[in-house]
Image (tube, rainbow, N blue to C red):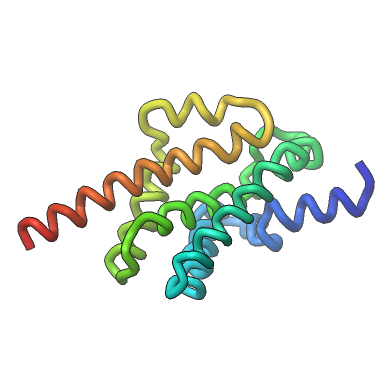
Length: 155
């Protein structure tokens, strides 16, 4: 791999070097997803397009990143968290509650890796890096929808 490809790979997978934050890089990656959502949130189409683009970039570059860093899913790769966070927001109404609860639920499921998510991260290459976070977003979406329904029902 040439130096330009290596630098581009690092730039993309660390989400503009955010992944090099020494503490909780995944949380900071998730916060980047929140910020992108807040900047684009008035346009559902823009959020969906950003999610698709960032997710595709993750699938293209994360496998290369494992070679660059000579390590399986290094913690400095945070594009998967950005992608997962944005995916979560594609399926909920814009509200302060949903932004905060979506962030908390996504981080919770990304960290504890419930049913079947742990198996996804064992897949080799980009798929293993990206799919566990997208699945965590799926869990967060389901729980957020249920919570919103319960609030509507009983609130």
